[in-house]
Length: 279
Image 1 (cartoon, rainbow, N blue to C red):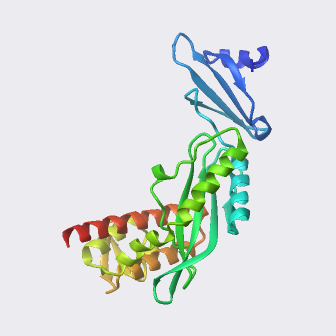
Image 2 (cartoon, one colour; image 1 turned 120 degrees about the vertical axis):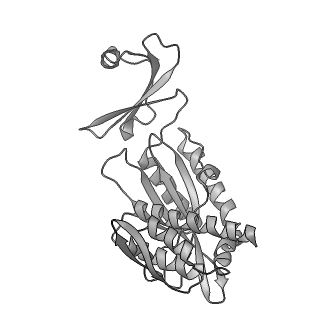
Image 3 (spheres, rainbow, N blue to C red; image 1 turned 90 degrees about the horizontal axis):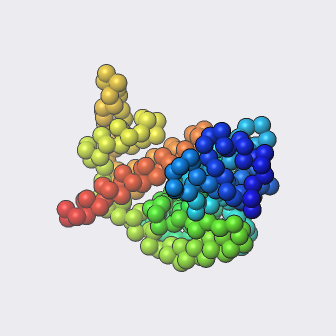
């Protein structure tokens, strides 16, 4: 629909000539305005996010669709209800902050006899960025927050102004991923085939604070550089669980725990891939 004259004037001072306004998310404090900057022939969309006191403008392509964090949360809770999953979410004061929601399912499988993991999902949304879903596996032996995410490009959620349509797509994606639980266990089982050595210990020491990699690795700092003093003779599955246990039992934001665990997963995935290639 066309913008009012008053709202057009504010953007005119920025050299942005507004032609249309999209107000699908107005109730969530998000307004979208399509137009051009000066004589530039390209079309843009200026997205304004307001919490009533502070407003932020972000420039995107004309086809970009923002998703309010409140909508992402509603989809996540609907998903939890449909699939019988437990919910943990990170709610930020700023409506433009990245939003995280973790869903834990009841399905479980064994890495080895007696060592069970449960299946779950992470929804991650940025109102002016991406809306993504990743799977993870949670170790039940010590409930340590173990997360093995998928690659982001594989789980991008197609955004829409139709919340019901998005919800159905997310539900379908989740059900397909749940059906492949056994495949996710192969990475964990591969970790049990390899042991920690000096080279990998030093890589981990440079990537993580010493409290995160203890007790597998003992580190001291020499002129600000982390140096490995000693490391345990453990298989990488045990090392991985030491790291994820430390991450999940520290006072960290959910998003920080997820990001650090992703980092540990990526390091060990690369290490195992290289080791299996050499084998």
